[in-house]
Image 1 (cartoon, one colour):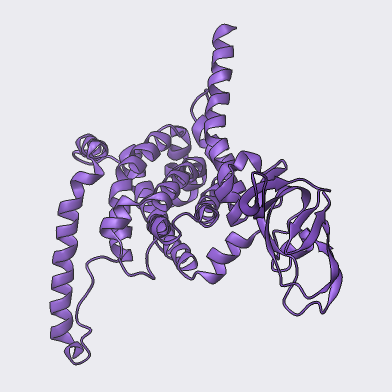
Image 2 (image 1 turned 180 degrees about the horizontal axis):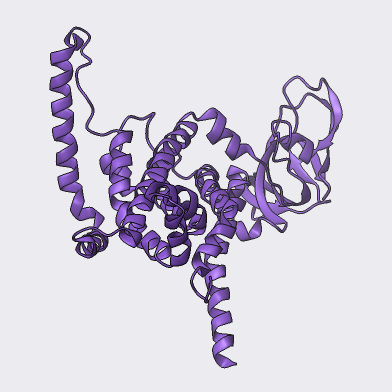
Length: 408
């Protein structure tokens, strides 16, 4: 009983550690820039006291008058589209000079918070406001006052809006370009290794050839090779291929006239090859262990019926291996989509071809303290893997449970 309770507590703790940051990202991305800078995400769901500045009226709105009336919230929301300010007005910061109690011939500068209902002297008139934002500015005799900017503290109601997403998706072309580049890299880098690994796994599981076991051991041992250790030879290899391709291009075409002979050593194709090479050992190992557990009698029946290896693979192995293929597809997709270091060293470095993780890293310097924009980009980057995982979840679970019980 105690062990079961401990497991439940650990599971809840893991869920909490993963869910809370995601809620924080989504919440901050839906808040205004002012709110995200001045208060934490945990305050977004309850009224929060924030400071705002409003102008009593616009120039030319009034001629000679004795009283000016208006509403603070209407003044604040004139230029606001999605983040309309509402709530209760708590106080207004009064800054002005008043007679010095110790020296009637002089004045002193004071700053104080004036509560609702209390009159304060603003440019010779009595300014009074209410918690709902209504205010009156009364003068002893008709005058033409200039607009006055006042700092007001409001217990603001929670408000959310899609402004950050609109800005990063439609006003900043770098984010859509990064999304397209990530799809260009991720889809082939997921399909290619799975296809090759499926053929190799079938060969290791059901075909007999000299050195099969030793070759499988070598493939499995490649999983322990650190990715960073392979960067230098991989880069040298791609640089050599690019130099050879450049020379061949210059020899076969007239590209020297247009200065287009050079072939880039960093490209999407390089990322496809690198991710395929890094992902193949694990893919072959997982798929081989799954395929070797399929009923032997089924394959023998197919052989008796005259099916060759290709027919057995395409008509029996692939349909029965869908859970395992889907499980690895999720792992590979998530790894490639979120990869930063391989894309940084192997991928193209043009501003329009950067993948999303690199673009997100560069936004730390572009957006600086604009947390709502950074978080909106991070949420967009997370949404795609979440959709992929949820759409293939049933296959993923079947792949994890396959072979756990007899007949599975």
